[in-house]
Image (cartoon, rainbow, N blue to C red; front, side):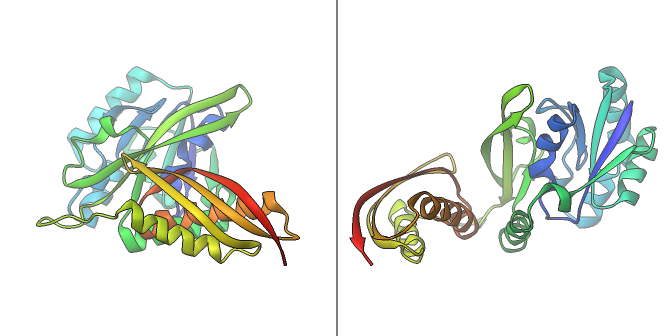
Length: 269
């Protein structure tokens, strides 16, 4: 078995990038925070993100608990993958996981700094710091029992691979806002945020209309603009899309899947 490792500090987005790194390198099985995952399906283990203390989470992630360790070792032996990707905060951590599970040391290390852009890493850190958000590279159904008391929602993704496209699903989790109440962000409030964000992009003369539809924690946005020429409209539209996706996720905890932009009219600068 060839073992690979993806390393990076906590909260830098390793789990978000894990499946992409795996599939790009012909790896179909990975270990992340106490879980053994294959093709987006949990084979064994319990998520360390469900532990109540940081110490407990670390023990879970490096398989110090005998019953947990034995379960994953048995599942690994049965699955017998040709390649395995281990996620960890450092080389030392991934090596300890290998020792616990009786695996050879990683033959290659991937750094999150070489996988994600500085902007993506900064966004991941901000989401972890401000909202306690984590990403698990499996569908919600695979971890729902482990993470009772957390808010969970799916993120669907599409990877461009040499063999074609591949669809998958990750799960965003975060602590519940309150045990005695709830937080509601209306579509009207989101629309107001979007108007404010788009109005500050160079080339936008006026935000004519914004419509937002939120389903299961993901949003689709349709907006109509008047632009001030001369302006490179495709570049302006891409700047608006990235700004909205980044800021709405940080401000509201809502993943924006689609941003449809219609340029309704043009005005002279």
